[in-house]
Length: 176
Image (tube, rainbow, N blue to C red; front, side, top):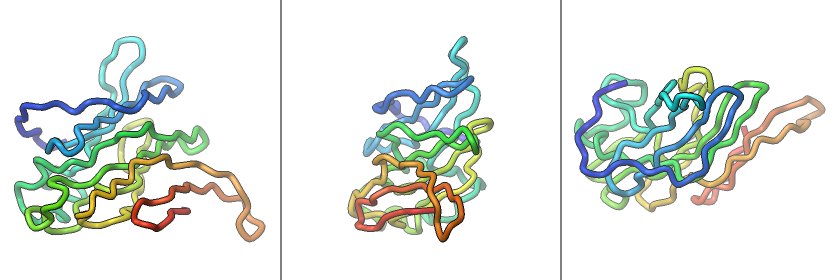
């Protein structure tokens, strides 16, 4: 997991915890306070952290190349204000992340700024990001994409499909 920079503030959990079969999953929501946010799974009996995955990759982690300023990841943002969704069939939990920080000074943080303003699919067993979709690369409009991501079981062209749906604040919808 990369090093965590020293900050005076701490991420808060604004969304309700997501109770799974053997863990409680929560998202940090330090928002626009310039923190590096995360999703973590806790053991419900002990409170110990089972896994913790950041929405802002540290140098050397996948996606870090999309943060062109070598220091901008430290104040990256990517908050999780809304409780994620869980699919027991795939053991994936889906969370929408907030915008990058500073929100309106995109010149400080050139690049796409993964994994902000995105839908993220975390493996509930180990917290690894299995896939992602970024709605607004280098979001400089404070769009966030923390709203509900809804899992839909339906047919597409006669084939059973599992879809994740979200009405993006930038005007685009996600159906994957």
